Length: 157
Length: 276
Image 1 (cartoon, rainbow over the protein chains, first blue to last red):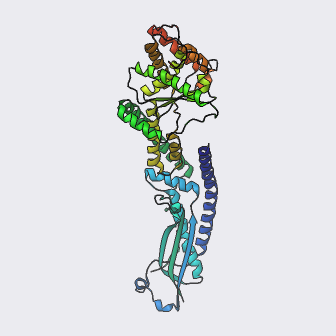
Image 2: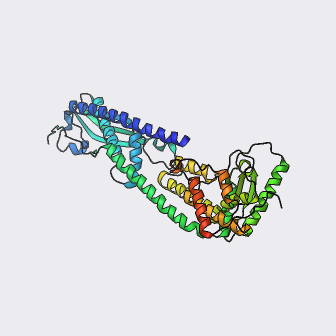
Image 3: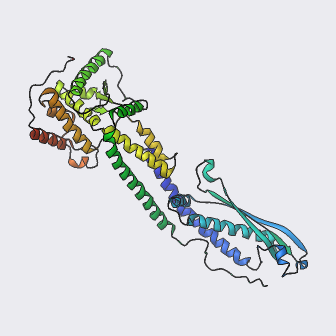
């Protein structure tokens, strides 16, 4: 009987995860697209100052600042379950693709927002890691949370 | 070099796939593979188990003995009565085993004070006869039929097959779901369960074995039908037994009657119940 309850609870969590996870993801993507459009005119590049100095006079910039943006996103139960099933057969884990995509884009947007009225952002770097994966269990490789950190140099005229 | 801001349409970083469709496809594949593996391994177990030698079978039974838990008993039975009934059961068991042509593992028998009309062939080699069933037996032959039926499960290694299937599920559970999962916990809890659920084929085969053994031991099959009729309800609808592990009692009675007619077994005077 207790096993039926456990199975029922898993199904309930999966359904709740699917419903709320899909709603949250749609809302987040809508917010990302809106802010990306607003911040489209702030150039953000991965090139270094040294590479850029060959084509651009960096003396025109009076200020430089380190800017960063970070985010932690949690995966919903439905996507986690889907990810575990996918691991048996191989192929794209689309459930995690959207999570990582949102995390990176959100981190970059927060970096740009922190930069404020910067004229140029260079040397952009991203670091992604999982947080709290498998609740500390040794053999549990399923992901629960993603943390993405973006950092760069903002240049001001 | 010029910076050209451009909004990128679509999202190439995320595979365009409806998640529910992906879930159903993967789940169907996973369950399909699990079931196929269980069926194939189950067949392998059915093929291997009959060839396990008696020595190994006894070792396995001793191993199961440590995890077996006794049937719940109603307290209050006088020790003298228990000992008397145990001796009676042991006498009948000895008679039957000495006439059995199939190799049997080490079997013990005990009387259990329980209201359920039942007898069990436990995986550790113990046959339990419940007091409610025992009280319904009027002759030694009737009792012998019940014991012989349980011996049939041991003769055909039905307990080991059930154990084998549980071990297959444990193996599959560990392979697919990891060591610490709900399915494994359920299997481990029931692995040492003292009652084995036998399927309809196994039950009918045990009935035929019991008839044959009864005939060999007593020279006739008197007591078989009456024993059966006393312990099973034969007027229940067939539909109740479609998904049951036990065949419909009426069907079992028919099978026994057919077997009796086929082999030309006779009915004769039955022995009274005593310790000698």
